[in-house]
Length: 317
Image 1 (tube, rainbow, N blue to C red):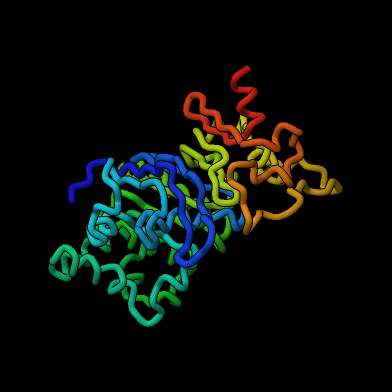
Image 2 (image 1 turned 60 degrees about the vertical axis):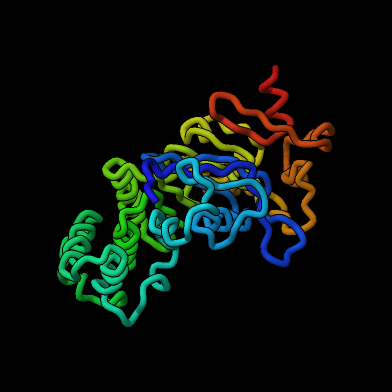
């Protein structure tokens, strides 16, 4: 399979787990473009990881479609599809085998997949380790995961994701458990990879400040739906959905009075019995009005999408 661009498109995607009685993802529409980083944000339990797990077909959609460069991923062989996807995990310890040296974990798959010599595979691994900012490449290659730091392990994971020259990289909370300095270095590394290799990066993160600074597009998820999406600058500077507004309001500020209580969103993300024809955020929404009890409406203007009846009315005004 020849992949030219690495554009991932979700079109009206619904998903429910096998044996379940209701969908956990509802009418998902968004595009991740090559050369850009698309962030997926939202509270824990909003099904962000479930969404990205559909791309490598850990599960298949139950409605709608996901396409890679215009081709439905269900029509692509599992091997060809996963050759085009690199994955960077949240847990740097669990993802690397503790009893296998870094060099083997980096090179074995590449050696078998491309049928190259072990020497060629090791040279590529060294090149990528250098590219992700590891200076003592030979020492790291000969190390076991426990012998290097958490930040170093995450760099190794990023190099591993790049080994087979993917067109799409999925990063599921790649900066979790890293200190502030290493966290920023890792995000800057993704930004550099995007510029150099023109891949599509889909990133899940709770670090909204880093998302705002480095990501091109943002999709805001709530209870298995995308409630707002658009360019990062626009979503962060002019959020339209009450959930997005509430989510951004809880970010602490350096100039904030230490005696003032931090903002919070009351209530919980609904787990079951969701009526997706209505606004799922309504029970927690401070801007809720009587007319919000009807079917929820969506608006789209200049690439900025909002699933909210109040925003829909303002868009028409």
